[in-house]
Amino acid sequence: MKKLLFTLSFLMMIFLVNAEDSKEGIKFFKGSFEEAVAKAKAENKLLFVEYWTTW
Image (cartoon, rainbow, N blue to C red; front, side):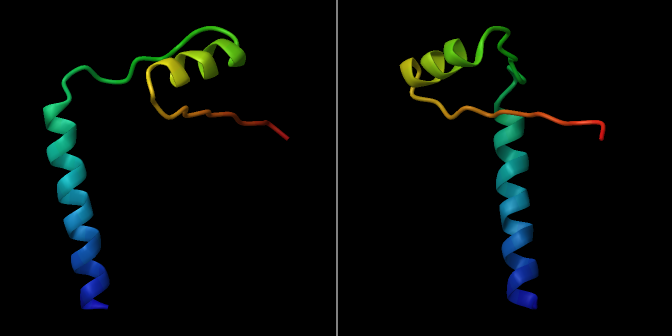
């Protein structure tokens, strides 16, 4: 259990340090899914897709 807590703490520390270094923030893309995929491939980046429903 201690090892798990240490690992989680370490990962959180890395995340916070990286977040401070990146002052740009999140840049959302407005366009079609196909355009987003093409842009992600061209920039060699991952694509994050968020969706929800109100069932």
